[in-house]
Image (cartoon, rainbow, N blue to C red; front, side, top):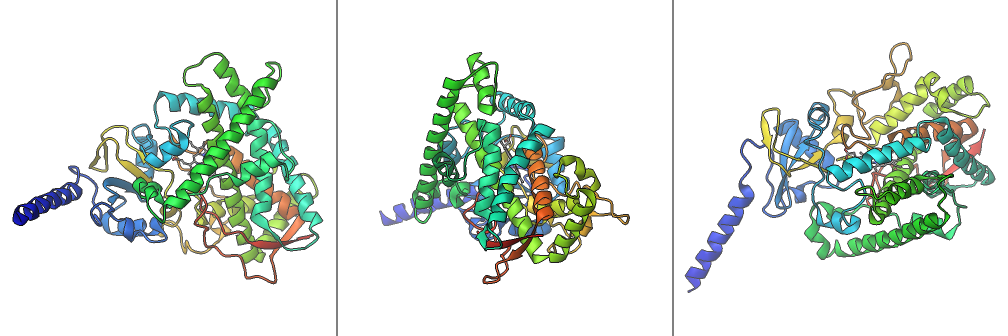
Length: 476
Ligand code: HEM
């Protein structure tokens, strides 16, 4: 009896091992890791760096097992362009993931699979952001208005140390709220504080969803779920207020434009979809800009010489005028600084995962429909074939011998192709207007009672973001 049981268990384990070990035909090469968890235990604190190392051994398109499923990693710009741009439609899906489904209820834009619903929602989103002034002077005024409130707060601090990230978060949350909801809030408004404290953080268990049921992943998952439900409740209330105040003659914001589509019963435009869409824009829009500015200010503190050069350029080009996007053309050093900031600290190191919509061929390999795809944006930004000493922050690398700015196709913080970021222009305006306004008026220093702020990333954030850090800003 014991022998039969042992044989049955043995056959079962063998089958499990066989199923796990088997690769689809002509699948890209790569490490297999352990049954059930794949390479997850080997990825370490910096999965993007480990995957880049695998790339050195196996090539620019590699396969890994993460959990029970085979996945593919695009490890350099050539592979990223081939997949996300040249074969963009085939690579535009989003993988089905139990955690994401529970959190997003399969609505919104960021996590829904590409198809008719995603296409109409994305088209609507891009067109509406444009109608609301994104990319135009009216948006510039909105952002500058919020930045000017922030600058006055800096001034009032009179050289006292303060926590930088939390302060700027309020400013950029407000400019996002103006676009989406039509109003900015006083910084201590309860709704505003509730929005900010309930923006969900990143989840370690997201790539292997069953882990959410077990410690140590269960508690963080429950916390994020609660935050998402609270945030959804706040958004529902804001939408209800919009319905009551709606006026066809005065369409104010993203929600109003969405309500118009709902009134015509346009397919796919319904209330749950609107709630999650706003949530996706708040989550995608606020902490990304805050993280990028947060890293940039750390680099300014670490490199006072770069700060000085930027101020000199601001004095020459803008003087005492109000900074505007029209100044950008004449500011090669500022553009180089911002491009280097995007390169040096990649916010979405492995991008939001994609998934193949059909069977695809790439560089002779075959990838079945439904395979999860990671884009190693970090490795594009740190590829030593392209970047000399990539670990050094150096804006000069983006200037030619005449001091002209060189836009690089190897800097892709917003990803590329069908699913690339829809808030790219808004983010571009925000970063440029923040750094020009800030350095026109202030010098930023580390708190002398503290260490220099660290380049380590805070594991709690959705995007790669610094830990909170204190600074001193002194008026020039
Ligand atoms: C520095 C700032 C930002 C960075 C680095 C960034 C980066 C990204 C990346 C890497 C993606 C995934 C692209 C892909 O799946 O291939 C993405 C998607 C997205 N971003 Fe951003 N983003 C930023 C700012 C914003 C802002 C300001 C908004 C909106 C207000 C926004 C809204 C979105 C949305 C809705 C998506 C999903 C698009 C889709 O799935 O079709 N992002 N972003």
